[in-house]
Image (tube, rainbow, N blue to C red):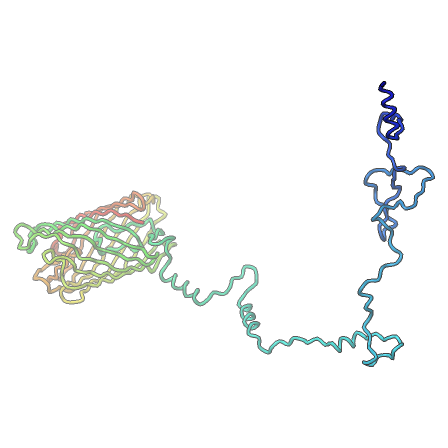
Length: 447
């Protein structure tokens, strides 16, 4: 069967007219397109027109009806507003049983003053004394709200400041030496009695060699040597603990002496020191201390004499001519008195004077000169010896004389923490006793 016949039968069966559709976009069905020619009107804004958002509206054909074209959700303001629920209750009124109008007549509203009077609120009455308010008022009196004002200090804070002024501060760290006076150096000779006034933390190895005159009746020559150290611990920039003498001693009398050679622990000398004046502007510093001389050595080395000697002392340091082009000078004076707690040890007064020159004010090389004077005031009763051994030995002998010695030497600061010093000392006036000459050498390791 021809194909055209089959197509005709299919169209007849489906009931669709076989109308050819033109090429191009299809036209919409269901009537003409709907478009808005006016802007929707919001309530109470009848005079405003919003700009079209989707572009210019598409106009209707001429003569098309315009009824019911307002989109849903955009309606005009209602002519009448729906009564609110609150208005439905009405104003409060008086019932007839409580003195209101008779039934059938409108009830009179209750005035506001009547309601307020009938339902009176209970007012809060503060107590006569409120402990909380009283406490807060007292705290507000102590507070100063002015800009930059500080709260008043407590009594404990004032006590802490007073205590800090007495003991000093910690120099920026525990056990740190006082570096305010780094231009000074410590004395070299008479190291156990001539004390530096600064509060220091250091370890100072010391070696002393002293020659005994051959004319000395007891030793008849020979020598006495000390090998040991000093140690100082700065608690603050004012308080420090000083170990003046720690070490051993070697006693070597001449060949014809009745006393044998011996090596023993030396006496232990230790005590506190307080720096009570630190003149940062005038370069002066003053300290005082108390030294305890404890005889802990052997008898054959003469280090066990008596029980104890107490030595109060004062030491003063001064820098001067600091504007001198070639350098400045430093001086240290130390004076004190040693008295025994019994009659076994000898008592004496001492005075040490130190003068050094800070070459070029670079704090490196210090040539120095020192004088040491020791005067025995009371002899001991420990031994029948007619002489005394100054700072190395307290024989407890029958000596009542004084000896003045002089020292020349120098000190070199490798750094402030490492210093080397040496001096040569000879007698200048008085009986030489056990002192022909002395050589002293030390090395300071300071923190």
